[in-house]
Length: 244
Image 1 (tube, rainbow, N blue to C red):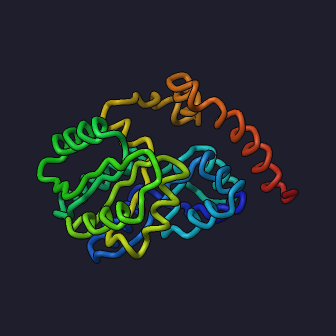
Image 2: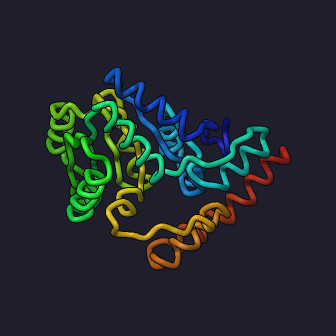
Image 3: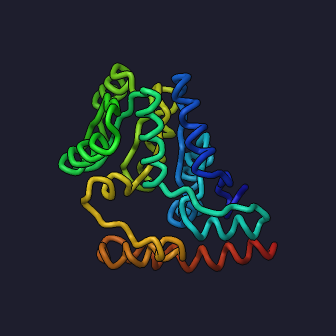
């Protein structure tokens, strides 16, 4: 179902987790995006990024505003598919089924804390791979080495935490090369490592998570929200009215 030219699949935690585990069990190279207002508006502005998101095998509604729009389109969704929560559900299922997982992204200290926390939360979880890439464009040799290492590790589900839009572009570029389900989960690395606090549930349910994150990281996020949020509201209303 397109929202401002970005395809959003009206899925649930249960169905998304089931699809990811099925693909992983078969060793398929797949990409999963978690879309919010930021993703939709970046895709609206950039055709290359839009092609990367729309080329994913699953684009789940991560943000509550997208759920509200989908409801107005006639889909009876009760909840969003929040990236950090989906991460825990997939990790739990992977631990039960013995599927190796990997983590790609974040700073080294964040990645170390993340892996320690999820191993404690999910005994028996096989973390077969982890890498904190440099905050720059990789050389062809570095990129090829990363692909070799991921595939050699036997990782079946690769959590990618590079942030929007970098992670979606990275997954799109590596689809068919990385023999795993690539799941772009953004800030989940920071949340589950303890590096960044999550918004209270009542703010998340009311679509106010952006306000909490703005208070935590104002210098990094204020331009994003000032640019994207008002336009999303206006454009989505026009689209629902058939005027755009």
